[in-house]
Length: 121
Length: 108
Image (cartoon, rainbow over all chains, first blue to last red; front, side):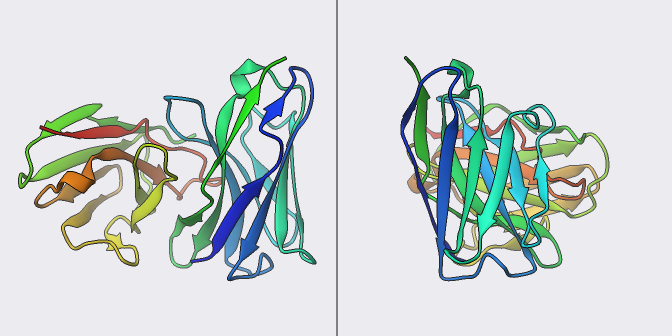
């Protein structure tokens, strides 16, 4: 397992861009069996997978969010990031970064503590 | 897209009782199935991966079974600290973007 921590603004205005960073410690984001993942959870609701990024820079994004989402990684700082454009109130959620660890099977074995992002004017 | 369906939505159980949670996939995911536990105000925690392998540090009272489309998470003797929402997730169909809707386990 590794330690992950989300950072970024907790309040974003409607139509603006949400940007979050996840700092990873205890492991390298360039390892070849991990996919660095963002998951969100609207208040009182279930988990929604947003997407992940691999060490090659390849991203896999939820189809319904693909037009608004960008994910990237910075090996020099061992961080990866999420950008979500044109936000609305429906994007208000706790945002988690996590590691999808793929040995024989894949699972999200390490999670950040989560960060509440509220979309409001 | 693989749809994951969990049942029941809510379960109310007395301490010491056996608990069985169900997760069904809309198509075969082989054993590429994980279970997570989420307590209020906390991030999810991995319990089971590969349908039946306990993650590091998970008590032996938690067990997973199944393959293909039908999966079960069993808590052999419910403890008060097991009150939580439990989610399943498949990782066979790539990207692994589908979670079940969750089962809430309450303590009577």
